[in-house]
Amino acid sequence: MVSVPYTAVAAFLGVLYFVIFPVIQYFRDPKALRRFPNMSTFSGVSSLPFVILAHGGARSTHLVELHKKHPVVRTGPNALSYGDVRAIKDIYGHNTKCTKDKQYLVTAGSHFHLADVIDKPDHARKRKVLSSAYALKNLEGWEHKVADKT
Image (cartoon, rainbow, N blue to C red; front, side, top):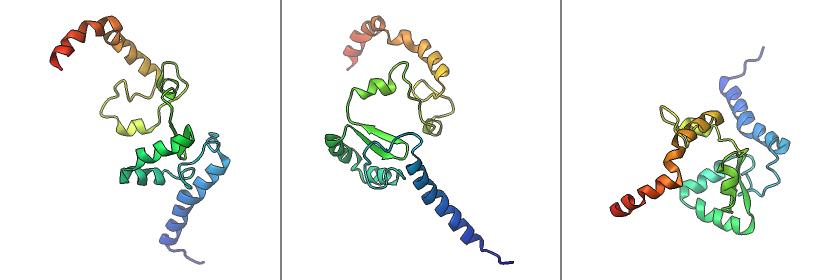
């Protein structure tokens, strides 16, 4: 019986997980994101190009240039960047079909607040509690107090 070194098995599994599986997912396209133009050649398979741009500080500049040509750009396997302000309401507005990414679990602290809660019923409950504070009547009442302090 031939024994295979553990490093060879680990290397094979690494290539399988980080190269082969993303390429298969790209061509399988379960979320129909391939119809959007990629930010770079490998954006459909990896978020690494986006991370490199962000690390170098050129992410925003590069995206602005891309959005001059395309209103929507694919920045990663499961990520899109929208260049139109009108998309904000469709993405973040009330009763949207969009759901928050699991990344919010990583960035949340010891408890979820309104901005990072993922569960829609929990978000609705927290929003209802805070809605009166952001009502126009209450905000107008605070306007003179804020204006005096700023």
